[in-house]
Length: 404
Image (tube, rainbow, N blue to C red):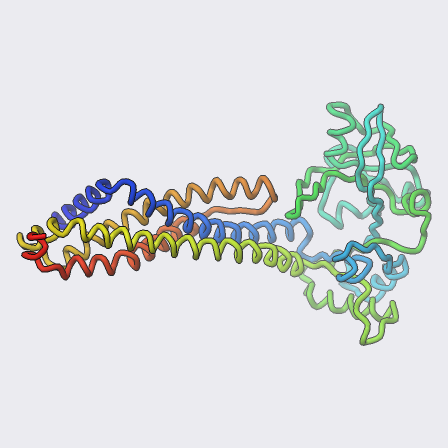
């Protein structure tokens, strides 16, 4: 134990003796470890966010959009879903617990007491809260009577409340939505932002009948259909059943692609994995390059150190130090530099992650696994880099080393 303690003290003293070299070695490893740590944290964060979104979205729920996946990719707004589709699905799939049409009105101008906001209006049914697990914190949702008679009523998101009403109670007040006077019935609870940075609280809900009759002037088409299945349902199996029924209803031939797009919990995970994959690829290359450069710097600095410390090594060998003691001392020095580099790298990673979260709202989650991986990787880099100089030092002839 005393021998190990002495070796550690000598290694620590040697590392401190070459401050500039140690600094550059630490820096090279730190940047590589920072990239690697952010990769692990971003992967964990993405999966964590995916399961949070699925919990909010509903594990037994799907959302069907008008237009094919390709059309949505180039932001085309072709309407292919109808009110008849809703009745057809409801009739043929007994596992459907709730089904609701959704209509969108983009860039709606909303006025109140001289204040103006541009937001998105959603036409929904009285089942909105149950279908989305999204409940009101003030007031109430419109009822069946108001839905049936196309009443000018609405529910606002918290962002709209903060922008238009400040600390004023909005319930019972009038706002103007695209020149249509509406009475505010309630306020939605806060939902925050999506992984792509869209503010979910920036919205207004209205009866879909009101949106159809007084804003869109279209009683046939809907933008999307929200479905919630019975608890415990095999969602992926039901997704395929929904797909087959809609293709049949839309009279699509086998060689035609779907004219709709189904978003399921599985699709959400796939999206976030793809989003993370881009970052992993970029940071993975960065970390490999940084660690390789750091390793080369470390190896060359230790080779230089061997040449400068020949006399010290020769004296130690002359007084009884074995080859393995010399090798171990150099390895300990390499490990010290590597561990310090991993600590600094972890600190840099935390700073970089905060910047990434601030700029791109990217989900990052640090865990003990990320730090442990950083330390283990740095030790491996240190071992590989220092092993050759350590063996070279151990093979020195003591007498020749002292003479030099």
